[in-house]
Amino acid sequence: MRLCRFDGNQLGIVRDGEILVVTEALDVLPSLKWPFPQHDIMIEHLDRVIAKAQELAGRARRIPVSSVRLDSPVANPSKIIAAPVNYQLHLDEGTNNQELRQGRSEVQTIDRAGLFLKANSSLVGPGSLIRLGDPTRRHDPEAELGVVIGRRGRNIPQADALQYVAGYAVAVDAVVRGPEERSLRKSIDTYSVLGPWLVTRDEIPDPGVLDLYLSINGKEKQRSNTRHLIWSVPKLIAFASAYYTLHPGDIIMSGTPEGVSEIVPGDRVVVGVQDIGEMTLLIEAGDWSADEMLRSPRIAKN
Image (cartoon, rainbow, N blue to C red; front, side, top):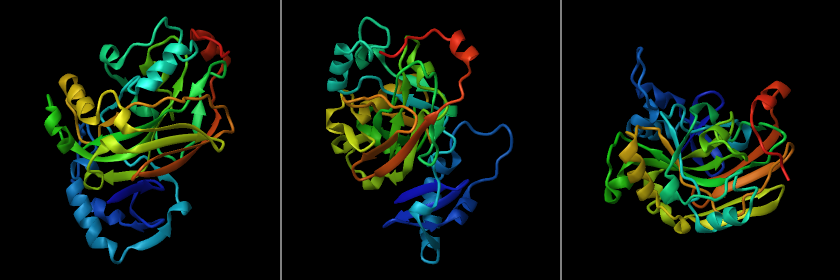
């Protein structure tokens, strides 16, 4: 099933370019009191939500996908986990390109760098603009497969890892180049995009064979396949769970292939993943002030 969140927490099933509005399916979710759980309750109860959505689908109102604003299909992840340099050719281009090395003498492999966290406040859906930060720097969008965790897990064996997945989505891990840690430069508001919907795990039997691509203003910049991941999706889940308890709704951005390219205000970015979908993102200037930029150490664009 393909489930989307749209127009302010409405829920829909996506079929053939239309949305079947099944927001009433959210009524199966439990009522909560403070302190609220540190996870996404819709993803936690996804089986119940899907069962109710299927019951409602036959009489649901239908609207075109193009008529709504799509939000991130996950509303409340406890964390966004990202994988650096997880494609060999991207590692090679970073090694050979000083600007992509972000002011460092070398690019660490994922085996040395491990994973990093992105701020939840950076998460948006494809209906939001990507608003660029410091205009003195280079900014890149990175096409990735997004993995949404479906149940709580700790120290998960690789052999069992996919059983902990709720589904998959297209992801963009945006970055401002510079010398600071990735968790800072990739956590700017709107720099984590997830969408256009959640495709449930049963529809993607093998996340290791998916094409993905990204274009800017109609020119293709990235095209690869998840078979070229250095660390597979099961390995990413297992490794992450050795450090963090994974909760329903946690998002893993699995890494980007070669071809990362700069974006500027006014650009139009199209990104997609095979068997999941495609989303179009518009880029605009952010609202950074001169004082904010002066307080931040930075390297200028070439």
